[in-house]
Length: 128
Image (tube, rainbow, N blue to C red; front, side, top):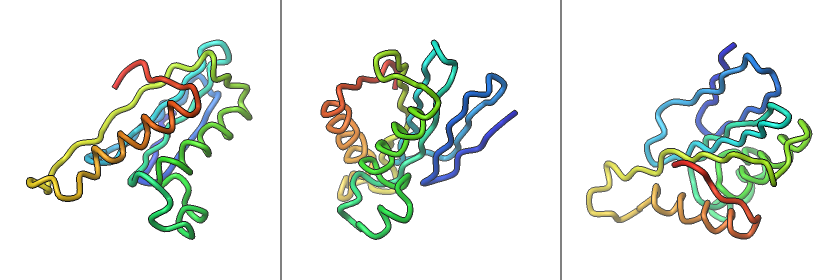
């Protein structure tokens, strides 16, 4: 069973046949959590570093932003008995393209925001 996670979206599962997939990351980040003890996890496809850019949109679409999306992923995977201490975390994306002069640096800013959030939560990624 394939579950496609769209841009600014998230999915969690404890179905061992589920394959969480996302496409077209570019400057976006794909973040996965997996807890092998309970065979559950989730995937988040975020677009922007912080919901401070648009707090209303951050509430309406939390998976769009690193800060609100990560909190959502933590809450939803916890419902599946995922524990932070056992997490395998992978991150992909954060590219810089169509911004050859580095004016916006969205990919870099996304990754820096993620690193900051991970540090505050005591998380670290194993791949990415």
